[in-house]
Length: 221
Ligand code: DC
Image 1 (cartoon, protein in one colour):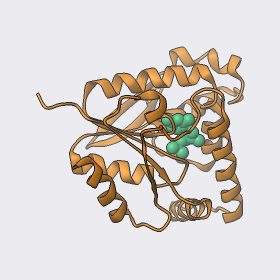
Image 2 (cartoon, rainbow, N blue to C red; image 1 turned 45 degrees about the vertical axis):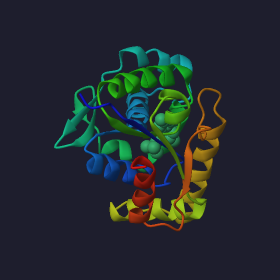
Image 3 (spheres, helix red, strand yellow; image 1 turned 90 degrees about the horizontal axis):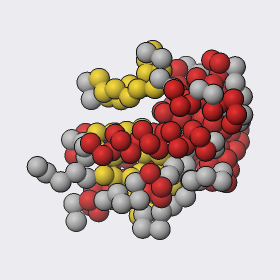
């Protein structure tokens, strides 16, 4: 049997991780696990139950039994919550901050990390997130830390949301990105950080082909 390879892609919101992860997974024919989707679905559950996403006691009442499933349909990840495909709903702008909040809770992280490690133990995969190289898969074969300036990240998010028909204000979006960066980097338990042995790539002035080329140049070495 071929050796299982695991690739960790971490970095702040809008740095381009998910686009890179998708392209890498199809190029290398391995699984792509978007771990942010899991935190987003958990936030959706709290919202549905009317529980504050920062209320650890409230969230702990449902987290152990959360009915969250990751399925692959035609090679694309779909996130199911209580049997419903919520892949689109979790992308709505209000879910982003809720996901950032709920991801700071230890009970949530322990549950998600456990699920992520189980999935990653079964096959070759690329995982994107915030703590993959530093905490979820410290022994990943390749670790990348993807960054970009705040302006560039806000601009990418603006274009993405506008294309989907959302009405968004650039300055508000930028502030929200800064707030999420702050939340994700300063939480107590497994914050967003570059693993010591991760390769950092600043994608601010690179197009996707250049980034993929750079990532592959390390993997193919
Ligand atoms: O990558 P994303 O924007 O879909 O992630 C949503 C939120 O989930 C993000 O603000 C931080 C959190 N997250 C996390 O804490 N750890 C991960 N491995 C992935 C996401």
